[in-house]
Image 1 (spheres, rainbow, N blue to C red):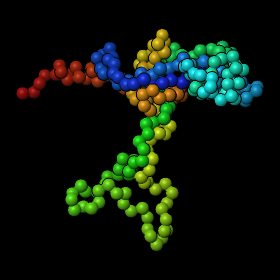
Image 2: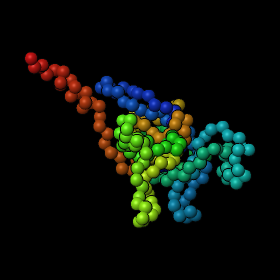
Image 3: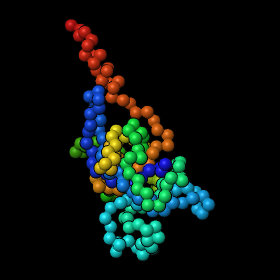
Length: 234
């Protein structure tokens, strides 16, 4: 069993549960990925596999070092390569095996990592949620950062001072997302909630090491039905 695989964010939508509740979900293209290299404790000191996301790629877009790496495995080159841990059954995994969305099951929890949307240069209100000054005409202080330190001592700003700067375009991991649906034929994975990054961005999907319980819609629907049956006060 492998820890995870590489995927692509396709977009967000909503699905309905059996109880009639609306669930916001993100549709992911999970794989297919191919095993390029298998590492073991004897030669590498740990057990893992190197996966490549299967998509059309020209050899001229791959470096000579990577091209030799692929030829050694006897596989065509891929654009995206990631390494994942082997959790169990290492003997059943070999180079050339294809890994798809079928490795996940419904109601399983996953951690999704990706690069968040870049926001460019942002001020302190957008970047750090500063309150800002009064919006009235005579205030003269609206969206400025305010004081950043004393002049006489220490005559400098301390490291880590919250200020304006680059926002977004950082690696973000959203944990404990519940798998709602799995489409093995089309390599699709539907997870509950939002994942980082824009549509079409590459993601790393891993099994959650410590999954938490997700509040089910069933309890909320039953509470609404009880409230509807309750007699109304005049």
